[in-house]
Image (tube, one colour):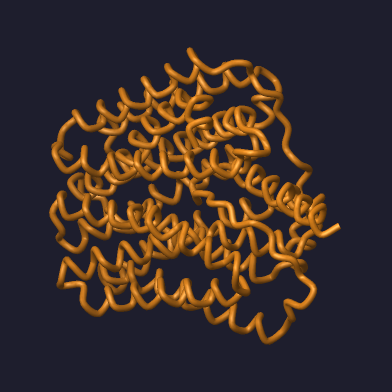
Length: 418
């Protein structure tokens, strides 16, 4: 772990500042939209726009990096992010915010692609799993820290937008000044979606459902809080509980999944998240139950993302694992675009508590489908690979790195068995 820190401290520090800025703008917009008089569905469009831009950026950013290099792409996109953050309060209109969110989602995707390729380059076969773990922890710390900043600021003014802009601006200073050399960049040729779906129906269905759940948590949790009448401090605590749960439950679930049929783990974890959301729906008048539900929802949905990647890789040959990553990220991205729109419409129809209703339906639906798949196929003869933690907000590069780590683990196991 110390070896990873010594090689990548500047990258990890910069990414933490970047995640503080990203986490702050996501929650802040959800609160500020209510202050500006935006409807719930208008805010759902604004929140969905980020994931549309992110998905587009994951397709285009690799080509930009190949043309002009990591340094130029990173600096240019981070500069755009910083500028857009300042412009939000100046153009308080749903259309302007939606366009800004598309642009900022595109830019964050490109920044993540660049940073994660650097991280992969700084790691080796002996510490790649630890590097991914540190990267995930830093992301979580950044988002939780953002909620603390929000709780002590004024969402109706300009200062919090300026703070987010400044944090993003200083985030790439340690990275650009300290990291060398520039890594070679390449991504695997993607596997056709039809082949991926036929190979792992549960993995693909799960990634779509989790895309909706994650985008709801990242984009709509603050919108839910304002609609439910929570204070800014309560909203900050609720959003924090989601990511604290993700941090603390990631490794126990990962450890368990390496020792038990992954389909059973998917079923149990998804059911736990769905039940927690349903109980929050029934007892939403008690803030403590909302916090507990947030902890469990985040603590199940985030590990499920990594779990579904590992499960899909269990059915693939090592040479196909990295190729499947692009399809999994795309499917998750489509779900992430749809998630806020569905929740926004449902909240308009049934009230704020529809936030928990949709999450419960998606998680319990995933659990039911996992149970169905257990009746259709046998696990006999399938070798489980390694579980490697990955954040749903990560780019294709992190997912490919996790798959490469699975490949290395699988090949190492084959060598030992031989």
